[in-house]
Length: 331
Image 1 (cartoon, helix red, strand yellow):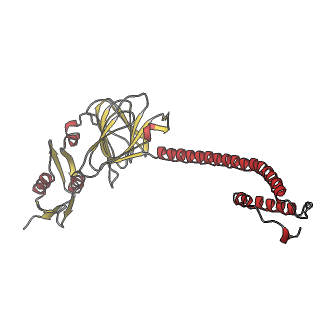
Image 2: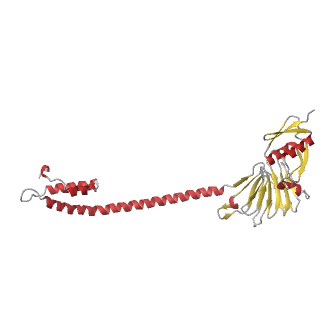
Image 3: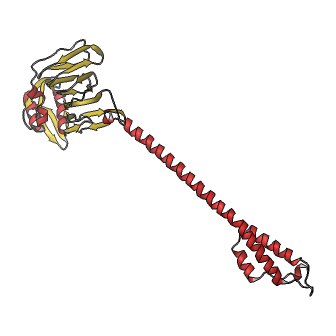
């Protein structure tokens, strides 16, 4: 039978081929062509009915052999997706763990802006009350790693803070720019500003502390009773202890008071700026190196302090949008 005599595809076969892959269609076309080349019937024309029956049987065989392959492909795809999901989960977990460790290893920093005060509860339950413009830094949880406690509790202070330390068997240390204060259970005040000529002042309210100069470990003292105080200056060959420091005046800042003793005007103006978050300018002729004592036992205002400073230094002042200007006394 030549191609012109080969009968056309039955409608059922065309419908079936529409649902098959290109490879399966080629196989069916080949089978149909072979059937057309089979030995003719007695009439000389091939029997399309028998050919169709034969083709349907072959089609069923092809379907049976193709189905497991598609099922295997689906199983392989599902397995691949499961592996990809597992890899994604593990990668996400590792990224989160790395980010958590990075976050944990970065210390906690608490900054108190000018004009404000703030009490900070530390991880062990100890409390530090920070004065204006002060900052405390400490390791998160007082731990070297999650669930792994550090052998000591260490905080770094810039500014002024009053500490009430809880006892938990570990040393508690306050690091300043030039000294170390070590305690086991006590309350004390530390004032340390790393400005030119700055110093660290420590006064004990209860308990005992050891104060050591960082640049000279031999310069160390122990403050063993309320009112004991010491100062670590820029160059401390040795430290002395004052046994009767006026705690009421030293701690008056906690009641919004203000206290300075024998300090130059330039230092006092800086303290006022920090305490009240203002700017103070001075014109030529103001004696910034002259010293003065000030004490306000209750809430003081910036203008109260500026007014009294001008009386003591024979100058005058003018208020501005963001603070004050000190001017020489008129001739």
